[in-house]
Amino acid sequence: MYDLVIIGGGPGGLCAGIYATRLRLKTILIEKELIGGQIALTDVIENYPGFPSISGMALVEKFEEHARSFGLEIKMAGVESIASDGDTKVLQTTDGEIRTKAVILATGAKPSRLGVPNEVEMTGKGVSYCATCDGPFFRNLTVMVVGGGDTALKEANYLAKIASKVYLVHRRDQFRGEKIQQERVEEAENIEILRSHILKEVVGDKVVEGVVVEDLKTGESRDIALEGVFIFVGIIPTTDFVNVEKDESGFIISDSKMGTSEPGIFVAGDCRDTPLLQVATAVGDGAIAAYTAEAYIESLVNVTPRTSKNPAKLV
Amino acid sequence: MYDLVIIGGGPGGLCAGIYATRLRLKTILIEKELIGGQIALTDVIENYPGFPSISGMALVEKFEEHARSFGLEIKMAGVESIASDGDTKVLQTTDGEIRTKAVILATGAKPSRLGVPNEVEMTGKGVSYCATCDGPFFRNLTVMVVGGGDTALKEANYLAKIASKVYLVHRRDQFRGEKIQQERVEEAENIEILRSHILKEVVGDKVVEGVVVEDLKTGESRDIALEGVFIFVGIIPTTDFVNVEKDESGFIISDSKMGTSEPGIFVAGDCRDTPLLQVATAVGDGAIAAYTAEAYIESLVNVTPRTSKNPAKLV
Image (cartoon, rainbow over all chains, first blue to last red; front, side, top):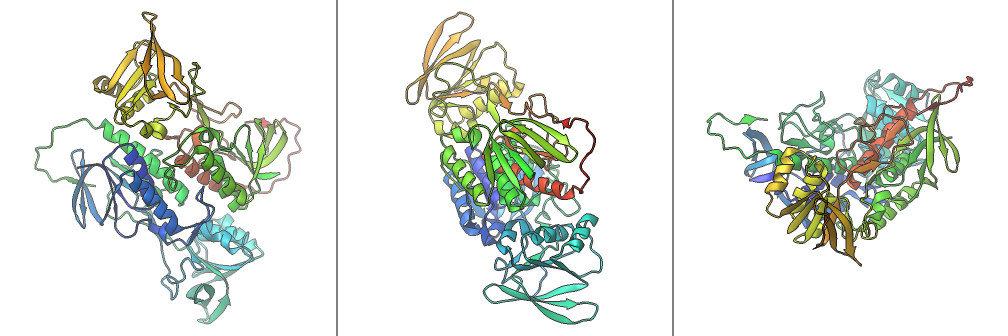
């Protein structure tokens, strides 16, 4: 029986682990794939305060070492479901059942990929899913933005202030993003809009050297030389396995103390309805979630174990 | 004319500076006393992810260097007032007027001091105002908690799990804190409650060696040998100079995107109604505040300067 299970080993989960172990909660962190999550796949991080330039993997190793130094237990397994048995949460994992008083969901989110050739291979080598993270690396270079929603338009406008030229590729004729952002991309002198176009292939060996795009109206393809490709076609939070209140995109709805709709289940980082998906914000969330979880655990009165044979409530 | 003025040079302000300069906002940070704020006065920090143990001053120097590396301008001055002139904020400082499109308040908060002999001299040497920060340094030692509100009781219970013995000193006969926390301090085997007592003096040369307490009912004083003194008699946010909506204690009321009641004025860190005053949470706030400020600045339409001679609205 644990006090706290943290699901997910990215910056939010590891920071929650640092705080929870210091709060002397009996805590285990469960990660299904890779300690560090998305950030471990990031080439260089320049905006986590204290580290002007560090690889994602190196930063994550520091976080993990930090959390383990206070005694955080880490287990590699996938969580399949969370049920409630009175005040106890019962987790079914790929490596058996775990019982705990509280849970912090820090499962993160993944950018949707286009699924075009060379996209995965060039990720971190010119292909990016985050302009805030990687935009400054493309000063006075040429980049392409793929997408037609709010994020794509906003980031195209942002990148136009840094890059010498921005191609904006959208598969449809009309953008979905805010009108004001549409006006800006249309007015920007260094943004070239390619409507009804798709990105067919990323070209490059060690780094991105160009792309192939197709005009959907004519069926013609052409090569464009450039250094960066920013893809904004959606973000998918890893929240399928848990039944707490979510927004229309699947992000978990959270209050200012990182509480969810379910007592005893807290949240941190990219899987919640955060305004900004960053290492700096995830660690803040993790600290708050651990602190709130501790207060919740302290508030639990000792109750007699249930005698009812009703099945545990699935959450 | 700046895009953004950040008031306060602690972790929240410096992180906002890192993000704002990377968002290419013309930004200045104004600090009146000491870059780093409260954290620069903290002996050792163990819970900012990535740095298992670092002095407050060293961490702050890293943050400042990081922010300056992106071109953040820093000015030493006090801000006396903020007024609105249309969409422009006009700051009166001890070193002249500054005009800006947006402001981030990151002015922090200070713990109330008792004002007893040796308290200031022993701060960071056994006298602390933060159990989350410093509690783990007192494992199996004897500490004293001063105060009778929620924080004092909660932190006494927390410290009782770490320290071998906790004295809880309160000047009144009755505690003000939550009933459940009162019950816990009363039930804890290693908490000795001294009601109607005051801390008169902290004793120690290089580190805390003991205290002198006075029983207010008998007027008698006595010495107690111990290693740590935790003082929880209130926290005062530095928010006097600005007229935005605040809670009863003066903390600025913020939304999830770090907005305040005044358009164009944003907030980060300990001066807002945060659930947790920590470096990790302040940097998260700072990143969000910069991002939201940038969106606000982008949303400003170009308006003709006001011709009215009405005085600017004081905020």
